[in-house]
Length: 100
Image (cartoon, rainbow, N blue to C red):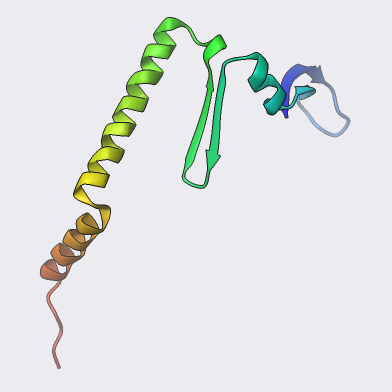
């Protein structure tokens, strides 16, 4: 659900003003009307509102996404498990074994 701030109110027992929100619509409906890109996966969160972004912000977002794609592609080429194995091997060499 997409909400927008509606103002602040005083609440008895709370020393500071409390923000209130109004529900605008569901993201599914808004995605059809606006240029929104939303992805929500366990290890990936992406939320782009292209209509709200300036050209400079779009360029910055594109640069961030390119860097992320480069890193993902490098992991695919090098193999993450290979890197983990190398780190484990390096730790094993650095830690002397204890013998009785």
